[in-house]
Structure formats: C-alpha cells, structure tokens
Amino acid sequence: MKIQNVADASFRKYGKVLGGYDLSGLLREMKHTPVPEDVVYVPSVEELEALDIAKDLQNKAYGGLPIQIGYCNGHNKKLNAVEYHRSSEVNVAVTDLVLLIGWQQDIEDDYTYDTSKIEAFLVPAGTAIEVYATTLHYAPCHVNDGGFQCVVVLPQGTNTELTFQTASEGEDKLMTAKNKWLVAHEEAEIQGAFNGLRGENITLS
Image (cartoon, rainbow, N blue to C red; front, side):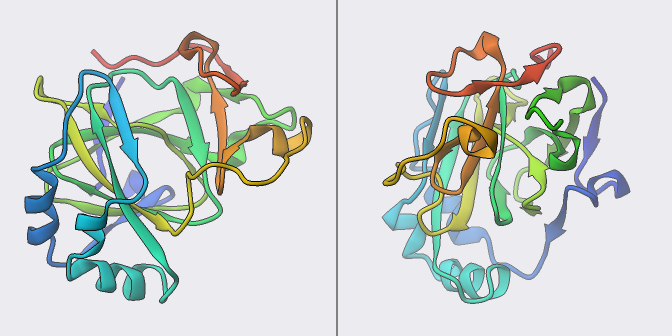
C-alpha cells in the first residue's frame, strides 16, 4: 500500500496539519506512558490535561468546549476496524506513525465498508493534526520496532462507557461507546462490534 504524508494535498479531505501550538511539554510527558506489545488506549490522562497546552487545545481547536486528552500507544500493523465521531479528533504523533483512514461517506446503506478505499498516511513525529469527524480511523500503525505513541484529544466523554441503551438496528448498532461508531473486520474478533468491513483486513508490511 502506498504511504502518503499528511502534508500532501491528498490528506485535505480527511484533515489538516495544525500549527501554532507549543507541543514540547506534551511530547515530554508522553515519554512516561507505556508502549505495550499490543495497543492501549486511555481516553483521559490527568497529567496531560494539566499541561498549559490543554487550554490552548480547548479554546482554539474545540471553540471552548470541554475536552479530554489521552493517548493510544503500542504496536500495530493491521486495520482491524474503523470508527468515527460526531466531532473532529486531534492527534499528536510522539513517534512516527501511519494512519489508515477512509471517508464516512463511503459507508454503504447497510453499514458495510469496502476496505479497498482505505488510504495510508505517515504522521511524522512532533506533528499535530486534526482528523475530521467524517474521517474513518482506528489505532495507528507503528513505523519503528519501538512501537508508536499518539496523543488523542477529543470532546470530554468520548470513547467512555455507554450509560444508555442503544438499538440493535440502523446506525445505533455501530455505537460501542459514547460518541463512537465502529465498523469492525471479522478477523479482528472485536467483541460486540458490528463486522461490516468487507475485503482485506489491511496489513502494513
């Protein structure tokens, strides 16, 4: 699969590179977070949210809405699933990493999605990006043997446990957490997920 760069024009329909933020404290604090052999996601981390950049992200990236700052770290080379939110997501690459992404508008009426439409983009270490609400994404892929580390900024409460009942039909069947709609590949064996990815479970070499 061709790996593009988030600085390329082809990324513009999926998101944009963000400037004007001092990422130094965030990158330093992330060095204390674990990098497991699989993938770990923590929605909210007090030490990250206490940094000066948190207020800038809240006011500039989210227009003053309450946010949470967490991370997704580990080792991964597979697509496995795609998810989307009703809001943009801000990612900060602490290490070089690759995002496998697509377009929500390509999800079919039966909520299946053809994985041949997925594109790969390198996010260089030290780069902050906005990933639009209509962009399908999931866990990053590592570039180096040491794994990947990625800051994840979202509106407060996103990706936390559901506290209400959802229907088992329509788009509701995709909801696996608050503000999280997910379509999985059957090979990933994600418990409780709708297996709607059709085609190859894309794997980076």
